[in-house]
Image 1 (cartoon, rainbow, N blue to C red):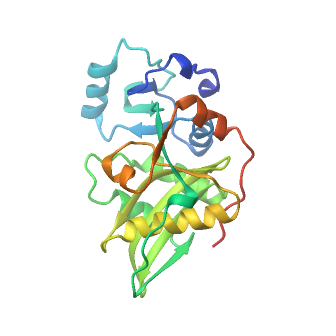
Image 2: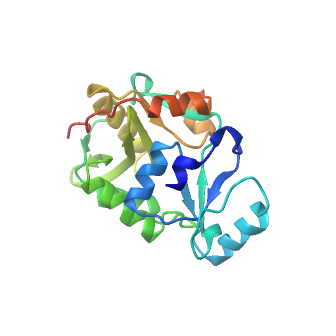
Length: 227
C-alpha cells in the first residue's frame, strides 16, 4: 500500500505529505496507522488551489482521477493530549455517553463548516470504521438533546481525533474528557489532536516529534473504550 512506502523522514513538516488515492475505510485506517490523516477538498475549486499551491513539491501523487482533491497530512511535531491530563468540569444537567450517537455526532461536526472538509466519502469511511469498532464518539446530552460531541479513530494506544462540536459552553471539551477517561480505562494513552492551535494547547496538549508519535502508533492496539 502506498502509505507503507511513504518515507516520512523526508516529508514536509507543515504541508501535505501525499496527494490522491481513495478515501475508504481500509485506506483511512491504514493511513492512520502510518501517522497520516486526510483533508479532502470540498469542491474542484479547492482541488485546483491545492494543485496551484503544492504541485512540484515533495508530496508524491499516489493515484486518483484528480489527486489534488485529497491531501494527506502528518504534521511534525504532532499535538497530543495525554489521557490523564484531559479533564473537564461537569455541568449540572449534562450527562455523557460513548458510542451512542456516532452518526449524529458526525453530522453535527460537519454542519455549517465551510469548506465542508468532511465529504460524503469521508463520512462513509468513518461510519464503516465505527461498525468495525475502530471509530468511536463521545456525546454530551441535556436531557434527550445532543449538545456536544467528539469522535476519533482508535490506532494502537492512540485515539486520532478529527473534530468536535458544542451547543452549550464547554460541551465539546466535556465530550473529549469523557473519551479520554473511557479510553484511558482500557489502556489508551494519547488523544491525537492533529492540528496545533491555542485551543488545543489550552486543553493540555504537548508536541511530540513525528518519529516519536509513529513509534507510539506501532504499539499494540487497545480495546474499544467502554460505552
